[in-house]
Length: 76
Image 1 (cartoon, rainbow, N blue to C red):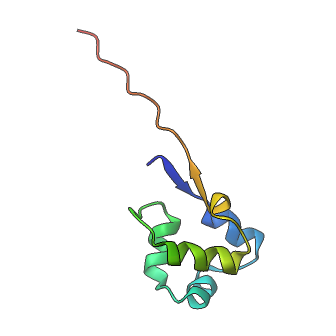
Image 2: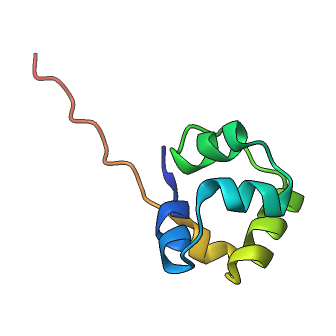
């Protein structure tokens, strides 16, 4: 997926656990875990706002665009 979520790094920098963040932003631990592992397909702006507020960061600190490498064409 071309959007990478850098939640692990931000949690480490803030010395906060995933469980503590889940409690602070009122999101289930399961949903936050899906976001952390990069398996989420979407995120609400209200969730992004709450995470940024609690981790004192900007959305760009949390999300990163990582372009996919083009696939090589098979030779015939």
